[in-house]
Image (cartoon, rainbow, N blue to C red):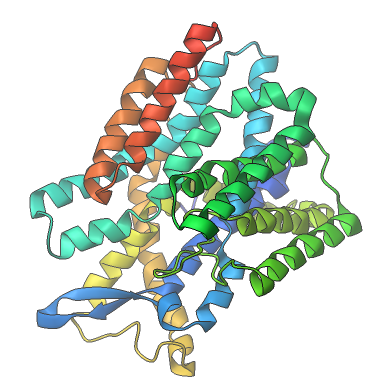
Length: 422
């Protein structure tokens, strides 16, 4: 690890980076992922249970003040925006080279699925061996929290070539349609609770965020001062809807809420995506210059190289640390929200980071390597295998549904004579 982060390696990487590459996009992805990790580690706290067991609490549900912090750490909309930029750039390059859409989809999903299968195999195996009760079962449920992202992102990426065909001529109409569908999903939540229509917002809201990233790639988002004004307007609208409407304060799921902003996502998250990307655009020129520094760019590159491994295993690092510190009498949740508690966060984060770095060093290689393009049949096998493994972990059919949706899209395109997605 030290060799690839040395000054000479950093200088080599900087020199090899194409001048046309938007390094701000890579930096935004890295910062967003770190924000996810920091946010989860801040609010998911282990506690000592009865008879020596280990449990956990959600700080957001204990202290309302923590719900305000979700306006800082809820960056999943920005993750999808950045994904939209990267997908648009990659798809355009693949098509320019004469590549098939099916190969492009396979290539994009392969990097997601390889580390996910390893993760799923570990925790599914652990749960099968240990049974459905006890510490391992609880740990598996906690560790699997990040997996909802995979189910949504796989679908959004798989349909990107289809959306792109409509987007070319009807960009405004396409984005407007996604916004309207998102609002209808919110209306379903407001009138009937967590209905099936409301849950479709996982697709509409995050697909709209992805298309904001496409606008960024196409150079159609405002920049500089205009972007700052747009960011303030989007944030102000979100705050107004929460203050005077039925939308909840927290931007992540809190049990007992009638109206969720996260699961399913609401129009508030779409507005936050607009705010976040416009905020980045307002400082993009300055950020691009700062990223020319070799050491800065090296740090960004290293995080992006292992970004899925970091995302998938950061809860596992938390679990490992909890199993160690709770039995020896340390209490990470003691004095929650107090000055004492905040002063102890650096030490807690240092411990968690050490375990996560170790996991990434051990398993990060599964995120890269091999053929640049996966064979469609290989991907076809990977999706249901991963889904069934995740089903064993989570106890729900979200990822199996994802596999069925992908297969349905594939068959539909095959009948229409287009290149299939899988």
